[in-house]
Each structure stands twice: as C-alpha cells, then as structure tokens.
Length: 313
Length: 147
Ligand code: SF4
Ligand code: SF4
Image (tube, rainbow over the protein chains, first blue to last red):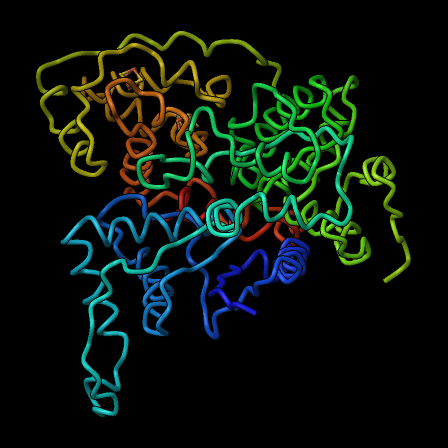
C-alpha cells in the first residue's frame, strides 16, 4: 500500500483524535496509508506576525526539511491551521531569499554534532522549499480523484443535505494557499457530491467562526457561529461538514452557549469530512468518535440508515 | 453578551492632526513591519463591509488604515479592534488595492505588544476552556495576543 508522509499536528494527536482516526481508516479503504512522521513538533499554528519573528518559522521549517531529507516530496496534513502554517512557511522559504538564508542558518545551527563532533559528514543541504504541502482533501481531489471515491462507496450518503464550511485559513491568503477560489470555492461541495450527498448553498461558508477568539473573546465567536449555523440550517442542511479542529470545536461545542443565548436556535450536527468519508466507505460507526461531539449526530445517521452503535466500543 | 448585534460601531472621536504627529514615522513603521503600503488605500470600505467581526470593533478596519496614514498611533494601539480581528484574511482577499490588511493588523498587534503589555495572559483562560479547546486555538491566541 502506498505510504504518504503525514503530519497530524497537536490537535489530531490528542483532542481531535477522531479526525485523525477517521482519516486513517478512510485512506486505508482508498488504498493508501497516512505515514506519520517519525518525529515532529508543533508547527506553531500561525505563521509569524512579521518578518522579524523568524523564530516562528523554525519549527515548521524543520518539519519540512525532515520530510525532504527522508527522500519524500509530498506532505499531507489535515488540520487547516497546520496546513496554512506549513504551506505559508514553505512559500516564504521558496519565494524569499533572505528568509531562506535566515531559516537555514538557524536549522544548521540546530544540529550540533555537525559542528562539534563531526559525526555527520554528509553535505549540508539548505532546505529550499522542495516539499509540497497538501491538504488531505486536496490529495483526494487531485491525486486520487473524487471519481475514485464515488466508485468505492459502500454506504452512499444519499438523501443527506450537507452544508460545506470552509472557514478562513483553509483557503486564505489565496496567493500563497492556492487550493481553490477564495470567494467561490467548490472543493468541499464536490467532495460532498462524490459521497452521493447534496451540498447546500448558503452565504456563510467562507465566513470566519471566530478562530482563536474562542479563547480570548468567546462571546464574539458565539455570535459568529450562531449566524453561520442558522444560515446553514435555514438553507435546509441536515449537517455541516468541516476539516479544521478549531472550526469543529467552535461550531460544535459552542452550540451550548448559542442555545442559551438565542431561543430560536436549533442545533445542527457537525461532522469532519473524514468521518463522512469513512462512513460512506463502510467503516464502522463506532470508530468515528461521535461520543466526542457535543451535538447529537444520530438524526443524520438515522437518515442514511447507519446504526449509531452506541455502547459498541 | 453585549447587545450591539448588527450595529455599526460608534462614530470615532475627532482626531488631532498636527504635522509632528503625522510625520512621526508611524506609517513608515507599519509599512515596514507589514510589508504593505498604507498609502495605496483609497478608503473604499470593502475591508470593513466584509469583516465578520466589524460589529465587535470600536474602529472599523478601513478607518484603522486611514488612521495609520495619519499617524494616529495612540488611538490605534489602544483600540479594541486589533485584538478582536481574528486574522481570517477576508479583508485581504477583498481589498481592490491588494493590501494585506490582516498583515497590517498583525503589525499593529506587534507594535502594541512591543510595549510589553500582553493583551491576553494565561491567567485569563478558564481551566475548562484550557482543557478542551484544540491546540491551534491555544497556540494561536497566545502567539497573536501575547508577547
Ligand atoms: S479594502 Fe483596501 S482600499 Fe478599500 S478601504 Fe480597505 S484597505 Fe482601503
Ligand atoms: S482579518 Fe481581521 S480585519 Fe480582516 S476581515 Fe478578518 S477579522 Fe476583519
């Protein structure tokens, strides 16, 4: 089975382990394996505030260089924050000579045995942005092909209406990310269609859910999530699909605060795209980590005739 | 929860324009840190109209840019806006003049943080939140809002 280098990132390693597990399950069904890097660190979640903070580029650069040094040129990641950070770091290394030199100077400094013990006499090779950072959904679209998914469904999600939610950093800034049109994207819609479900049109799919304001200003995030979810619900969505752990957290667990603040609010189940994918590919419902969700997903599963498997695990 | 849903922020107070203030080099500092050109902005307001957090701000994004052009450092670094901006890049994508307004917000945050005052400290987060928010939220908030 083909193995592709995979960077899970902190969230998937722990708090969003259900995103990680469903992704691994689904990709195995599709004939390739997410091969987690032997060693990795946090990528830093957000690229540096300005060029002056070159230190914030070091962790993601080291991750990328390790991938290159292991002889691979593609790195898959799933968390939108990791994707954004790794891809933009790679972009600045590739496109800006000064950044490239400064980052490599730090990285070279980082391997003391080279200087002091001379254990490693291989030629030092600057990291020049050789690795291609790919979002798992991008890999499914461009490398595997959505038609391959459509052809492997064991449990088509027929009859489900699903609202795609892009959020912010999966698509933007578009000149560096170049995943899809930042204002009129279709990558998630096409993904939903490939699972035989119907994508719902609503105006808030690329509107921010509050991101890290969830920590510093939770009320603001609650208001944003209320707008997004109500719009999706009013457009007929049975559920909302996301790929980012922070979007998931905001849209799912914040529904508690939304329900308290807005009497007209009706809960909307939230899914990771990998959960829908692995369900549709026939992976057991009990492996999806639905117990980690705040909003009950049973009404959606009932619609497609999947038993919740509660207590199965 | 405040009740200002759907309302535009209050009118900004009058500003004092003197040659000294305007020429004190604040705009140049922001240009340098952000890699953007403040003078490219022609005040169309597109950034503010698309900003999902505009309703929460005390100074709208386009006004921030205008105030930078006019060197109004104190008004800006004491504003709520720079801490409410969620770095979502909506403004950046929509600016017809190609200004990365998110980068400008980053630069302004950095200028404010360089004074040594954290906007959000570890003591301000509730234990339940700290135990449940996915790590990008935690790392992100401290990278953006603290030194
Ligand atoms: S969108 Fe650009 S040009 Fe228009 S007001 Fe905002 S910064 Fe200025
Ligand atoms: S990056 Fe900040 S200012 Fe720009 S649209 Fe998003 S929240 Fe508003």
